[in-house]
Structure formats: C-alpha cells, structure tokens
Length: 327
Image (tube, rainbow, N blue to C red; front, side, top):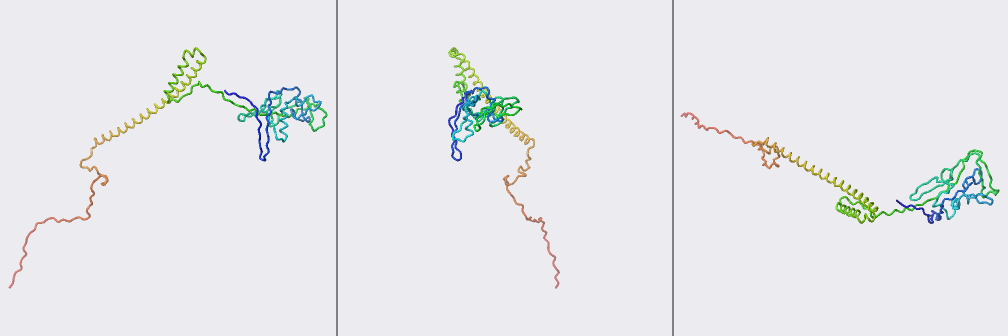
C-alpha cells in the first residue's frame, strides 16, 4: 500500500534562449467551487459567443458575473495565458468545480494533467469544449470590454447550433511515500543454507507457539505463525527442488561413466577372443606389412650384380701325339 497526497508546487523559473525568465506561480483550485444557477446560459461577446468564458467582466448592473460563476483563480490563470508577462500562472492542485466534470486526464510520471468541461459539454481538444444548443433555449449575452456598455441582452436560439465552452485545466502532483514494511516478516534464505534455514524455522516456530506469547496476544501470535510457516514452506520447497536437481545430475554422470567403462571392457574382451580364435602363424613374420624402420629390423640392399660360378669338372690328363721324325 502507498499513501498518495496532492501538494502545491513552489515557484518555478524558466529561462528561454534569449535570456528572458518567466516565473510560474501555482494557484490551487480546491475545494470544488459551488455551482450557481443560470451560469450555463451566459455567452460572452455575441449570440455566437463563448460560454463559460472567464473574460466576462463584472460591469455595473450585472446580476450574474464571472466572479460568481467561476472562482477568481480561474480568471487569473486564464488572463495570464493570453498576456505576455514575467509571471505566469498554472492551476494546481485542481478539483473540477461543481458545474464542471472531468473530461480528460493524462499521466506524466507522478503528475496528472486534468481538463474540466462544463456539464453537458464534451472535450473537443486543447482549449475547447463543445455542446449543442437546441431551438428555444435562452441565453444572456454580455458584451466585450471594448464594446460600449448597454447592459446584457437576451437572445433565443432559433435552430440547433453548437456552443463553445472554455475548459479549465491544471495539474495534480502526487507525492508517493512507501509504507514501511514490518521487520518481523521473515526473509527467504538461500536453499543451500539448510542449517541456517532449519535453525531459523525452529527458532521462529518455537517463539510463535510459546504459551506466553499465545496468552498475551493470540491474534498476533496466530498471524506471526502463519507468516513464518509460509516463509518456511517456500524455503523448503526451493531447497528440495535444487537438491533433487543436483541428485539427478549426479546420477546421470555416474550412469554415463559406468556405461563408458562397460563399453571399454567389452571391446578389450572381444579383442582377446579374436586373438585366441585366430592365433598368428609362427612362420609368418609378425612385422609383415610394417615399415622396417618402425619394426626395428635391419635393412639389406639387394646386390645389383650377380656373381657367376662355374660348375666343377673332372680334369683328364692327355698326351699330345708326337710327329714322326724323319732323318
């Protein structure tokens, strides 16, 4: 819960790019200005004039004037908007007069801009409220200050026509102050602090259910017990969910490790069985197909020239025949 109060602004000063300063003064429009009979039938200027116009001057002989239909603050505010002066006026805080209704509101942060239109008028846009005058309605017309005063005149509407009305607008500024929270309300501790949570629960529950506290103030003890129980249940629920999640994660990790170990064991067993079923040939070079440098064997070069060997033969000794000697 928050407490909201409407306050009046202090003076505000604004300086334009040329160095000219304007002071804004705030005029409160509270409480609601009472309604005066006949004010809704007054026009300012001519038969096509404006209703509820703060410019109506209280001339001598007027039976109803602006000081009766509208509060003085509205006239001061309206005249400052049409004059160049070092001080301008804004309405705030504002409550619509009884002869008006709230026609438009707009929120700006902690401030509310409020527009009031006369009863039976609807908001047309900035600075304008519209109503419909039907045939036969009677209006009292007050002339402008520049016109020679001849007294108010009475006119009767002969056909349905639109009537302009002047809205009243201002600002309501809210000051929001937070309601202080009770220090007895327990805070939810971290779920992994199970010791602290259990200790706090035991301490709070025992203190709230003690005979002395129940006998002294049963209502407050019951409320405190209910608040503590809700906080404890919330803490236990969060802790249980996190603990369950951690256990599931550990179980999943152990399952993956165990499965990987089984797969490795099965692969080793299958390799041993293949070796037993198909033992390697003893005459077969176990390093066949391997690179000599890697297998550690010596490297021999193939001789490029073949040595020719003659087969051994038997030697036969023979004598050569002698030629005959002639004398």
